[in-house]
Image (cartoon, rainbow, N blue to C red; front, top):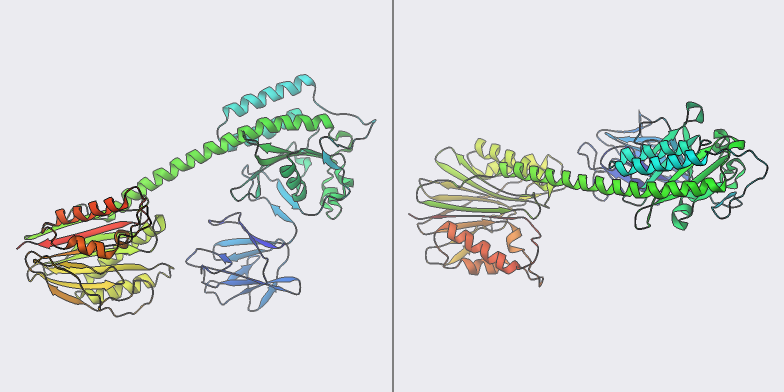
Length: 555
């Protein structure tokens, strides 16, 4: 089956099967091959299957499509095995039946790995219990003393190595001491998707060639049967009849053994080969390879676990740093305005989130209070939140009218070309007149608490669309005077859409009922709201970011 394989980018090494008649490459979520890069068009290029041939075509993209580093002209262009397709900074290789993969090797060697397909048929490749041998040939193998010493060295070296890039070369170096007839050696390991990926290769000398041959069929048999195999004469093996490369490489004998973790799960393969007929491997060599593979498999698995632990620690440190950076975008203290009190609360669902609030002092003795919610949560939402913070401050500081400022902010967010939107509410408080000007871009309706204890959601009819959906949108303003003893409460949907263990939603009605007759002091009101939300959640996990801002006028 034909497929594309990513050469670089965030999905480097990933295979995209071309099973359908057409596969679109682009930034849009509905593309068969999605490339999350702002420079990539939403529908950038397409690959067609026409009369048994695969064709590539640029779809009028802004930054063009390249085939083998040459810009594609208009129309469809035939693809050949191994062709490189480049979309902006991301490159793919197109493959039919075979793949040359040298990008996954981590040792920087010149040796590449060639994958074959095909069926086994009448093969000299057998399990270790069914190895075909010829009598009367010269036997080349290490002495028992050398073999024992090498195995002890392997055991000691592997016991001391923690990093995978330390373990893998030690395994191959030791193999050349045990198997003096070996010309090349290769290790392949499963990735997280279960695909076998070349990880390390080595050759005894420069004359051994620069390609390691690996059959997908053989590897599958080794991994599934959990049996090591030996090819007594790979040149005459029907497995390779359709591929001349074995002959070209002069591979006369080859062994392949599975690698197991401590629980007996196959995690990869270990392969060695030789080019000379008189130096071919014997059944006891295969048994020895299995012994080496047993030691190596456990060491490799331990190294993988060590790497995962280090990665988790690194991710944790990065998230902690991201959290501190994000907190730097949020106010460290509430405003100090005579006759007013403020309270705010912020807690992401993960360590970082997309909820946002801010206080911004404006000219004319005015204060802007901002609450926003970036769709989604996590690092991506937090990054967009940081961008929103900078843009919101600029727009509100440069425009005297809040509705014009939000219109400008929406244009800036729309021009980013992201498949995310932001809900936002801005309230501008005139400290002299106590007038509130409200602009709502698709956010939760703020709650007005009157002195008599009644509550009301305000500005619903003036609510506009979220930011980032459509540019040049005109937002409406809503004005209200805040009397002594009255308050406003702003929040994100992580509060009203909180779910308890019974899968019940907190809801706006519960929040409105709670705020009826609530204390005038903002701190008391805010802490009362969050305590009620926590009580409602019980042992349930918070599933969205939570943000709350409430302020009151006392005189």
